[in-house]
Length: 78
Image (cartoon, rainbow, N blue to C red; front, side, top):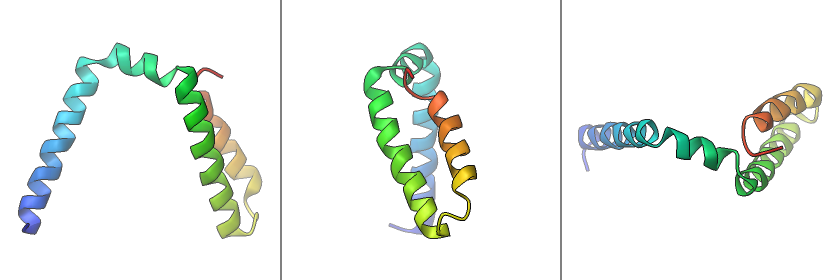
């Protein structure tokens, strides 16, 4: 697949995803505030925070935790 074809396909998929989100905004919000989303997001955020701390040697642990908490407030139900 040529680079132009790949770019065109990526743009098409991004547009479709955007259209889906617009058309289903209420359902998307409900899904993001679900118990299942909370569990998944906690695992992902914990992993990302752990990786960031590992890479930086924990030098920015307070900032990493602040970012993690702010993101967690917007996903899930806790």
